Image 1: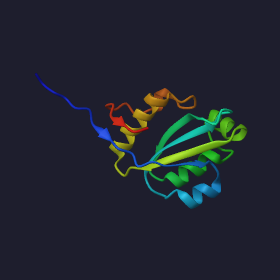
Image 2 (image 1 turned 60 degrees about the vertical axis):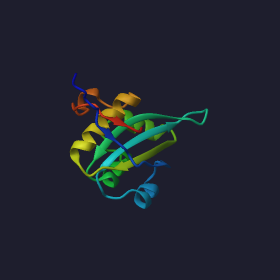
Image 3 (image 1 turned 45 degrees about the vertical axis):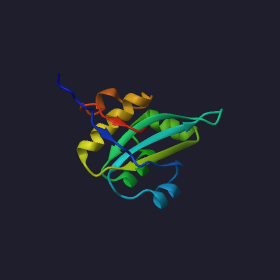
Image 4 (image 1 turned 90 degrees about the vertical axis):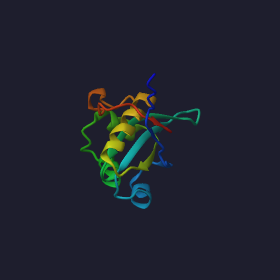
Length: 127
């Protein structure tokens, strides 16, 4: 009998923070990692609408706030609703790919393109 173990990545989450330029500039380093964007629901809970990764989290989170954001769903959510973000630093590309896939599978966010999610082995994470 061969035992296989699923790899685990423990994410050191920072947030949730209100999604705005001031919080990004004050709280997010220009380092690699993964992130989650969420909308505030009427009952006070949050629903994740997008997960992503970047080599420069600060720059990527700024980019989603710009009018030139190519994802029309993200533009709509950010324009209409109170949004929040959290992030975790991950320097290795392999870990970012695996964490992004795991986050996508966990949250099934409305604004992600399933075809753009990295096709890597599934890992366990703490979402």
